[in-house]
Image (cartoon, rainbow, N blue to C red; front, side, top):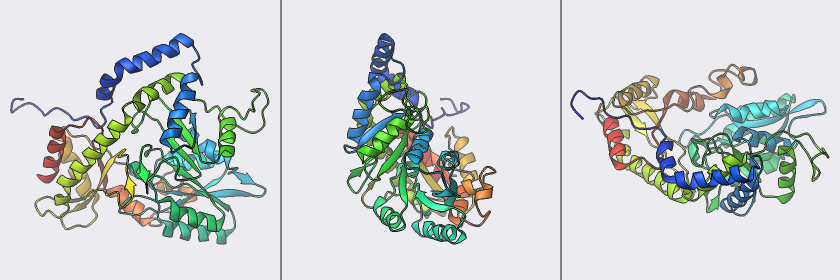
Length: 400
């Protein structure tokens, strides 16, 4: 590279490198689908569900058409919606992707937004308890369920949340759209909650070449209900419709891609964790540096947790350690000038989004999430991020 040339741009997610590695196996798997011609819910789906169930600790795994459909199907399976004269209330973190909230409305229920903790971005049970009491006192909606989100790949500590929910008669649906492959206290995602959903969107830790998802059920009876709902509510006889359902089936081609990717998934998880460890070792020094116009706080898993590192997300403050959107945006521009892409997940909490404003209490009501939206930035994260790229990113952050 000559002094006048721009540095090569680092991929934010390098699906091309993964595709090159797996191309023969993917071609073989897709060829088998083309040969047998069962393009929807073919034998690859059965094989995939068996593999997913093993990854989930031996629970039932049902492959579906997307992560969003997985959440909707889970809500329908638990009977969440409108009952008698009132709608059910479902508690969801406001610092999340819209799918977590939109499915609640699509099911006929009401989303109630809850704050998250600053250090790990996960649902704050103290905020959850406050919002629960507000809903109960108002009496307009009936508290029914809570959907914790494993944001950026880190699983929620389910036991305290489960105890809180059980004491109030609430269902728990784990939104693990970003955390398939992660573990908490020795247990894999899929087994940590009675019902868990995940996404296989291409950029996820395990992603297909389109949309896909799965529902994990600890109880076999729940799995049978999910199986029925994803296929229009049918029973063993496809024309015997026993409940309201959706068209939530997975294409065989997507299952074929996922089966190919599962052959190296453990290796990719290890590589993601190595990248995260490399970032942490290099960037913790910037958290207290006086040589940069920003300070960054690196994500930590905490005891007993293993993240799948769907994203590597920093919190950015100014040089004095105060929260600062300007410092975050300055860091992004600084990195972009060196060919280093970044992303902001999520620039506006759900309770401040136009579609959901009427279900929230406005600006200032969930302060941690509102602050995080101004301060977070995600760095390139994928299993094929090499040491040179990692060094280049960290050096750029440490040297304004």
